[in-house]
Picture 1 (spheres, rainbow, N blue to C red):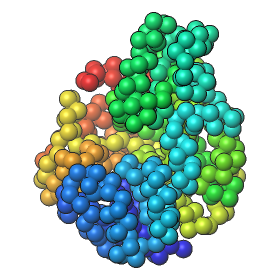
Picture 2 (picture 1 turned 135 degrees about the horizontal axis):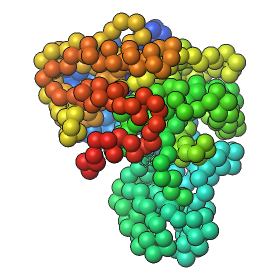
Picture 3 (picture 1 turned 90 degrees about the vertical axis):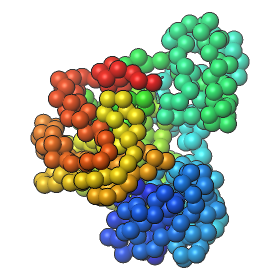
Picture 4 (picture 1 turned 30 degrees about the vertical axis):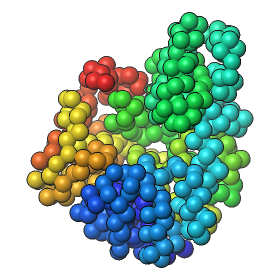
Length: 447
Ligand code: MV4
């Protein structure tokens, strides 16, 4: 087993990893920027190392500083958390070249899935359903137009180096495709350093449904069902739940089996998420995330599996040790992402937390690094807490979540708790009648 883990992250996810390590008897090393000296993950870790100034490229993205911190403290493994370096294949490779264990997939699998054109090709070869589109990256405009005409407009231009929605362009006809292609290429080059673009038939009202998998790199792989992350705004998820209110048990088993069969063939190692668009009863693979995700607790709640513990066990070389038959999904879980932001304008609201009282009680989990007197820095993500409710049914879960949102006190900064209270009263949310554009239609698009 691992002896000492360096956690290359901050905030609630750093705490999440730290807690798993502590339960496993593993020593922890926190790293932090000068803006995070008072952060909870630093206070709770066995050791901490300051790795640089507030700007992320000088601290949480500073690979030499993080590797040096691992050596100084004698850590034998690095957990990247999420965001920052979690899906940086070069970092994963560097960690291994320094004789340390990277708690995550192989650099090859991170690289493969980071290239969205390659990921889609591999997914299709492995038998996953995909959206019809260009044959890989677009090389010839006229050939692309001819293919789009056969598939049918509108089509969506996407960047191979992208993901998460940045730089996408809809084209409704050949003229628009011709006009948008150079713009998409230039943006892709500027955002991601890679001008490769591809297109897909545009789905106008999809849901975002993703499958959580866990592989041991030795050919074993299981899934924990799906998460429905359809409630989002500006490509930021707001509410995630498991199971999806729109899937049948048979659909769940089918997409789960398809995903795990594919990942068994790849001999995938670690936690991973296959993202799908779901519309008119059909799934289409769009991307794979090779990290633990913010919304992982909803899968933990319905499965009883500690995903971070499993990540660490697998990284230590242990076999999964159980198969799909041992996984029993039950009940319903919903997560509200609590952001430090104005609930109407969505502008970030950093500052000092003057009063703090987290909800508790039966079926409630709060993952947060907040405490009274803590100052939320302005340099980082505005996610400050995750509130997760569990219930036997979706109705019980919603009821409990509403109760917990009423209990939650966070003073001194603005949060989106009022928005969550409102969403949980929306008839369309309660009936499951929404798509990825629903929240933006409801609150108005700001950007
Ligand atoms: C799409 C799509 C419609 N058709 N692809 C946006 C983020 C990126 N991961 C994929 N995205 C989309 N891809 C096709 N062929 C619509 C979206 C999309 C979306 C997807 C998931 C969650 C939120 C979204 C919001 C707007 C657009």
